Amino acid sequence: MSKSIDGIYTTAVETIKTAILQGQYEAAKGVNRIQLAVYFGIGKYISLNTRKKFWGQGALKIISERLQKELPGLRGFSENSLKNMRKFYEEWRMLDANSAIQIAKLQESNSTTAVVELQHIDNKIDIFNSIVVRNIKDFPVENFFKVPFSHHLVIIEKVKENDKRYYYIRRTAEENLSRDRLKQIIAENAFENQDRLPNNFAGTISDSSLARKAVMMFKDNYLLNFINVEQIGERDVADVDEREVEQQIVQNIKQFIMTFGTDFCFIGNQYKLEVYGVEHFPDLLFFNRELNCMVVVELKTGDFKTSYLGQLMGYLSILDNKVKKPHENPSIGIVLCKNANKDYVEFVIRDYNKPMGVATYTDSAEMPEKLRNALPDIDQLKKILENTD
Image 1 (cartoon, helix red, strand yellow):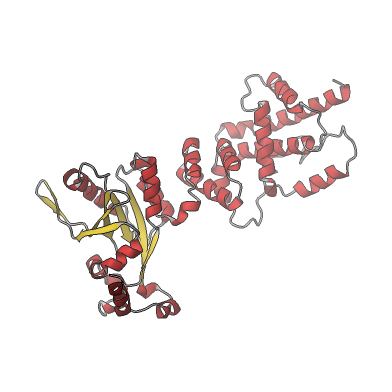
Image 2 (tube, one colour):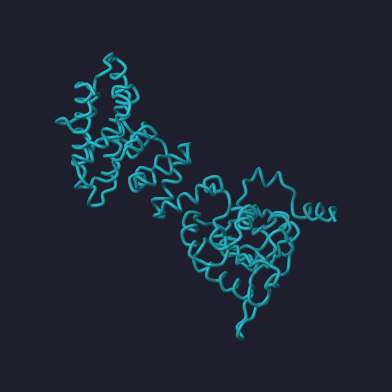
């Protein structure tokens, strides 16, 4: 190895070692932002020196070995780890406010042995200013810095579009996802399935194929334009109770089934369930031939509440123990309410051990006037349905 190349590697080792030590104290205290900044800064330093071949072939292996000699017991700085830091920087290069200037300087240099020094303060990589987020639309700033480096690697490896990455970053930070769980939701195409109702099917239906069918069976929002609260009376819409909405659904059950999905058969409303002398009356009970299970729907005219899941749990337990046939699959419960925060529902529903989901509905009163005028009225719809018999 020539002295000039050896000197380059020595400089590289000292620069990276200084950056490590500079952030080691804060990172040891669990400040994830500092650790990410260290890796981002080192990744930038490596990227600009390797992509233009200022370092020779096999440089990262040599630098890694020297780092581990300089800092015995150092973990996370293998050759592969250094490559991951480079990838982390390159995938999030847009966060580096000075990258365009540095690249321009790099391209102006004709020396094949030059060493690019990046954002140095007293010959140190400035890890505290490595990442700059400025005017990037929809970028989840706070959540980004809460996600561990290992999780970031999963996201950039498996997800290529930024809007999808933002989604998984938010989910990881807000739900404190493990790496395995993060990989699972990416494999399940959680981003693409955002329009599906929040549910816990994957964790409660043992047959993965059946769980996927259940996810695809239900929507997150249903347009029940035949529910006309204005015809119920002169009261405020908020005062309309579930029983009145239920009656309108029952009166238009065929249309409801057509809206709800395929292969549904109506069993009944206010279906009596009894256990130990205590009676329960779930709002709507169906059987789905494709899923080979009963589906109980609980109607709510207000916002989602966690207590609704507990209520459904009771119904499902009784159905599975007292009503379900031996050849049928476990029953599924659906809360059908006016409004629900999907991320919140996903968070709270995961610990329930019965398959449940939460969907919302829109009635005629909430539809834009132009859309309402474009639709046939209830009498016309009934005639259309009668003609399909």
